[in-house]
View 1 (tube, rainbow, N blue to C red):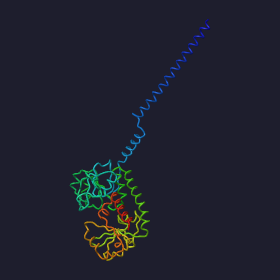
View 2 (cartoon, rainbow, N blue to C red):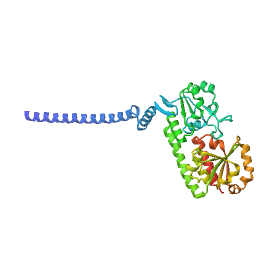
View 3 (cartoon, one colour):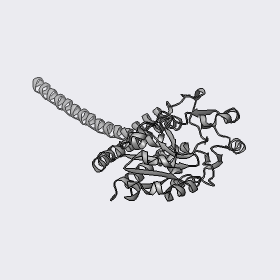
View 4 (cartoon, rainbow, N blue to C red):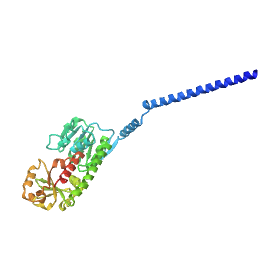
Length: 344
């Protein structure tokens, strides 16, 4: 009897233990499920997602862009943070900033103009005019209270007064636009945007270079400008000449090849046939409109084969030689290609 009771008691204990373990197991499963759900909620609300983490990393990187030390023609300039108000004393800097999606607080305009270049459209809306490149308005610059002023060594005589207003960056007037773009990228913290601008240009000229070579073959092209002093020929060392001859790969006639490091050569109207180019780009604007008209009506000019065959193309000298920002340069390339790849 005692043995039977003990057996039953033992069996009852085993059943209770089994039920207890089963209950604990179910409880653990429930806890794990709830923990999993909690972790998912935590990921959405308290832990950054991959996209957010990436954005945070980018923000940290952008913060690390400053301080930045910029070498320029007057030494070094340290920017501890991105300037909020920038004054630019050359239209090409306005062009450069717009190209990377930024806008200066103020900019000069070209001499003789009353507003910003037409090719920029309404992009400079809200940008204060600060006089002209040759004669910056110091009072207007000071009233703007800029954090940074960007100018070129062309305005060196203005540097002492300008640099008293705000930290001033002085860049080489003749430096390659790509180098200027690199500096603007550092100032505005837009390196990716600047690289896109540069690469898009390189891709464009690479494609056009091949098309032009196929169309023109050995034909030569000259870039000239009628002036009071005579007819100016621009070579490969001239900034626009570099675009035509280096970037687009156009062939220079022998006389243009002889133009030295100064970039230009002055000749008389009577010497123009010696250029002996198959095609000409003729720079003209209001400044030398009289001289351009005189050349166009000159029998010497009219006698050239290129002129007779409609292979002399009039282009605006203000756009082609005055600005040198990426927006303007892309237009120069487009206009040159359109003329040379046309029917003639």
